[in-house]
Amino acid sequence: MSKIRLYIDEDSMDEDFVQALRSRNVDVLTVADAGMLHKSDEEQLAWATENKRVTFSFNTRDFYRLHTNLIEHRQNRVHCRRTPLEPD
Image 1: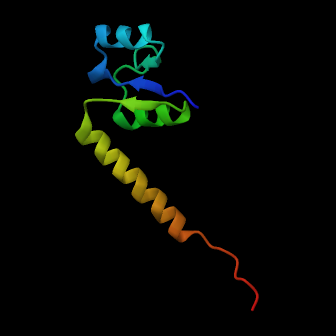
Image 2 (image 1 turned 90 degrees about the vertical axis):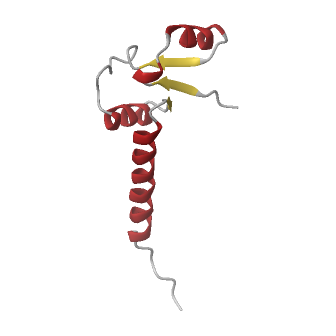
């Protein structure tokens, strides 16, 4: 089974929380660890995606918007994909 790899957003980087996770062998990186302090939410999500990490954030409004846009973009991409026709 795969282990969840967390990426803690700036608004959730409570030191005690991060230490508690690490003491329980949770694979966790903060935006500070990754050198991503003060980057945009879009950049944070892109970094997490590229590095196969799950974003943990209290910033639900913005990340909900980003997630929704991502899903809509992927659906549009899939719907526009051409598939070969089967011979009759």
